[in-house]
Each structure stands twice: as structure tokens, then as C-alpha cells.
View (spheres, protein in one colour):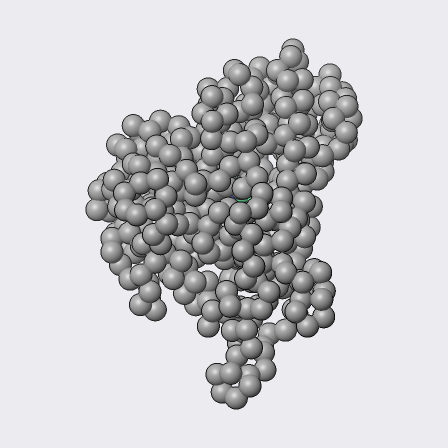
Length: 416
Ligand SMILES: *Cc1c(COP(=O)(O)O)cnc(C)c1O
């Protein structure tokens, strides 16, 4: 069963630019009707022409569905990967990846300010199945090297920029640390998006997305994705498939990480439904133009806040004051639309997030509309009391694509 052989999903756009790939890869006009947009294939099953006579490889929609196939091909093309997999949420994608890679007794290194849900999944779900973790400062390559346990560490999990502190870590250097220990380098690319950063080209093995955020981009769908790359830039021939660490085979006998992820996606079944896949694909088509505006507005908000007397610190990788600024400038094509800032006390932070009108008080990020939140009490409440606890005077904004003047005026009145 190979959905890659489905009609229309096969044209090669690898030589094209990002926006062209996002709009066309996996999305050739429908061969029977000419429909320009891949239809929402709302069907659970597919007629067989005699037993095993599958049309285009489709059998049952948990295993593969043409709308999902289109999204998976487009995401793979956007990240420069060899295989994409779409899930019901970002955490479902993470769960499938961790199941594919880890066994009891294994160890993973995670960021010391990881996304709260990632920490909860690793510590409280996989922890109960005998997987251990170490939380490290991933902006410090030597600290990560020290946290690795050769023979036990199967993955280093990177977020860059991190959520909510906007820390930057060196994907290429961490790939070398991971590969020297026969571990995978996983990059959660949700904040940067493939438009601003392509981890696979820097040496990462697999990219994780919450497509709920920038890829979907309109705060109207929850989804997740994995994109597995060809190995680049370190040991072994370039372009070889990424193998499972420890020389383990996938449960169906395949030997690559992509084989193992494909098996787990179908075996556990937390797939993206056809309508969700279609919405996410619709979002992906405009990612490039949206990100340009998110970056411009993010920079405007960050400089405004940096000048504001009520603000004690602004965390934005585009600011020269940011410790990761130079690395971000090398590794990313823009600095994104996420900005965090501190206002001196929890009371002041709760006050600001309650007074904005253009910025909506809500969790999540990456949509066209600006959002504001208090990580300590909202998105990161689950890490309170752990090594991942965030400062209580921190405010995080997801800067949308409204008019910059309205965004600055709104923050100004909220801080007054
Ligand atoms: C939201 C988010 C996730 C989890 O994704 P869901 O779609 O909410 O399951 C993972 N990583 C990061 C960085 C996120 O922002």
C-alpha cells in the first residue's frame, strides 16, 4: 500500500522555490475532473477492483486518504524531506514519533523550556513506560553533550526558537552531537515554519509540527505532522534514508525511520481527517506571504516594547540584544512573529493580558489574528514546579497580520 503512487501526487517540484512548492507539490489537478484543488475525500473506504485491486493504493482511510496524501506530500516538499505524515494534532505526531523510536530503558534529551505538552508527554506518558529524560539548555551544545548517555539516548529533541522564551539552538551542532551517539535529532519547527527554517538541510533527521499554528494559520483546525529527511551533512552517504537508532527494525520489518513512522501512524491511527487535512493544506498555500507579514509585525512589536518604560525585557531573536541573534540570523531566513516580554511582576503581566483589545487573550499561536497570553498560568501551567517553570511576569504574544499601527496602539494602551 503506497499512497505515494496515487494519481497526481507525483509531480516533482523539488527544483522550485518555497511558495511554488507549498502551492503545487502533491496538488496536481484531479486527473478525472480537473479540480484545481484536491477535493475533501470524505470516505472511509475505497472500492477494490477484485481482491487487492486498489486504485491508486487506497484501501481504508486510516491507512491513507487522498486529501491527506496531498497534504503529506506538500509538507514533505516544504521541508525538503522524503516522507510526510499528517496527524490529528501536534501531540499525536509527537506520540507516534516517540513510539516509533523509543523502547523501555531508553533516554531522550529535551529542552529545559520545552513546549509544556511535549514535556508532559515525555515525562508523564513515556515516563510511565520506562523512558527517561534529561531536560537540558539546548542553546549550550556542551550541556547537551554532557546530558547524552551513549547507548541509551535515542533522540535529542530540539525546539528553536523555544516556547515561550524564544531561545535559539544550533541545529547543525546538535545534529553532530546526536549522530555521534547514534541518536536522532528531532526538531519541532512549529515556531519557525519551513518558510523561515529548514532543519533537515541543517542535519536534523525528522521535523515535527503542530500544524495548528502557522501552517494552518487561521486558528480553525488542530493538526500535526512529521517530515522525515534524507540524511545530510554528517557521516554516511548524503541522501541515505534515516535509520532507526540502535539498529532496530521497524515492526513491519522496514529498516528506516519513515517505515517505522508509517507503521505507527496506521497501527495507532491518530491520523488527520480529510476535512482537517484540506484546511491545513489551504493554510500552507499562503504560508510564505503570511510569514513575511508576521515577521515584519513581530519586529515592529519587539522594537516598540524594547523602548517601553514598563517593559523590563523583550525576548525576540530579531533584536540585537538577544543572545541567539547571530545564530538565528545564520540559521533562519527571518525571525518570526512570536515575541515574549517581562513586565516586572505577575500582577502587572495579568493586568496587561486582560486589557488588550486587538490582541485576543487566548492560548495557541500562529494565526492571522494577534493573541496574547500569560504562559505561567496558561500554556505552561503544566510545568509549574518543574525545571521548565517560566517567569511569572512573562507575557507572550503571537503577532498576527493586522495593521502594525493598530497592534502598537493596543499594546501601548494596555501597558499605560
Ligand atoms: C502547540 C504546540 C505543540 C502541540 O501541538 P498540538 O497541535 O496542540 O497538539 C507542539 N509544539 C509546539 C512548539 C507547539 O506550539
